[in-house]
Image (cartoon, rainbow, N blue to C red; front, side, top):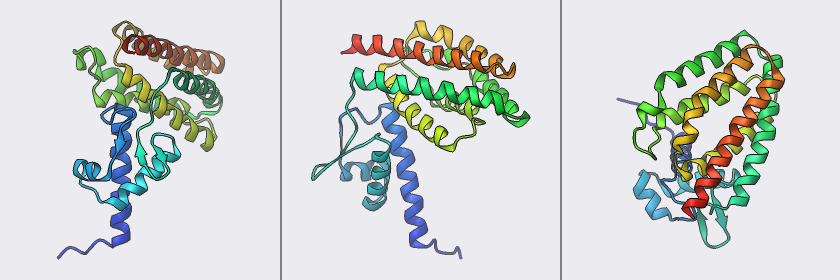
Amino acid sequence: MAEAVPIREADETASADAFTLLRADIISGALQAGARLRFIELQARYGIGTSPLREALSRLAADRLVVQEVNRGFRVPPISLDDFEDIAALRIELESQAIEAAVRSGDEAWEEGIVLAHHRLRRLGRQEAAPEEDAVPEEWETRHRAFHNALIAACGSPWTLHFCAVLHDQFDRYRRLAGRDPVAQVHLAQQHEELLDAAIARDAARAGKVLADHIDGTRRAVVERLKRLA
């Protein structure tokens, strides 16, 4: 007979599951910007109890992926161009500094990690995997994020990695809401190659500039697309 899972451990697992599912649905846009997050609806959607959901929502509120309103519960944050521009500027500054530090201090294991992450991303082939204009396969998103994480993994600062992750989540929420820009997509694979080359060449300044340009190019595409959708 299988041993019973302790209640506390089960609650922690349910809370972690709720956090992962809610975060993914908020970033992907499955839970729309500004939407109320009602417990009865979330319980039906995820099959998770109120207490784990509340804990997960509080964690997400700390990263500003959820807004907690006094006496009114939780909701998905609204969107604004000013907010996105602020997120993008901070992400460019922090992540470009992080990759420069990683390039200067990364060891052989770090180098192997970025080569593998890039290979996995390139192998997937986004254009073939997403023939519909606005379709973005989740596996591409996962591998794309893994490549960016690998690039800065050796920066030497856990706080920098934490804040880069927070900003990347916020940036991706806007990017995915704006949809896929076919023109911008043409340059993605090339930019990823340039990032890999600069990192492997141990050219910190070039890596920082390529990454800043890469993020800023996406920023411009998202801004234009959001303006058209407004």
